[in-house]
Length: 158
Image (cartoon, rainbow, N blue to C red; front, top):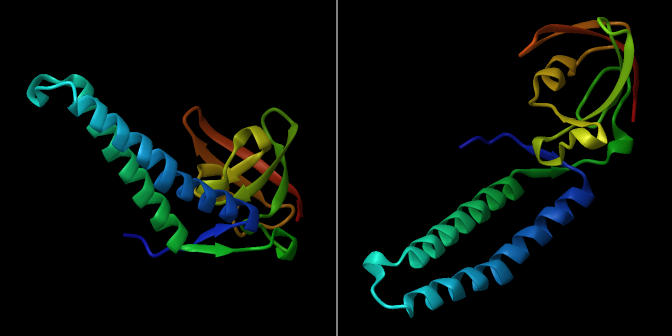
């Protein structure tokens, strides 16, 4: 198991804790009820409904264990305290795509907070990894499935 910290905003931590509570109460009860209903249908050796309910319960328990592991490694950070001298987790970065000559903006976040539709990319993603520690003016080469992309760091903010 990895001992790496998971950096989260206070809001994301609260969201994950609420999600865990929901899984441990409501979702667990629902899964147990489905197993009991399927068991009531008779012969378990040929009961696909029972097998499906048991598998759903196992998947739920796996998700609960993963979420608990994430929460034990969680460290709350306030994005407003991030320095702007170089790119850190929670930095907002304005980039110039050297090929298309278009500006792109991303905020670097943990995997748990990543949401490309909101411009939030993981520090574990190829672009995120390559940006960490970079300063304004530096050019970053990123290996992507289509080849190598180059970005110039234009601005770093909170």
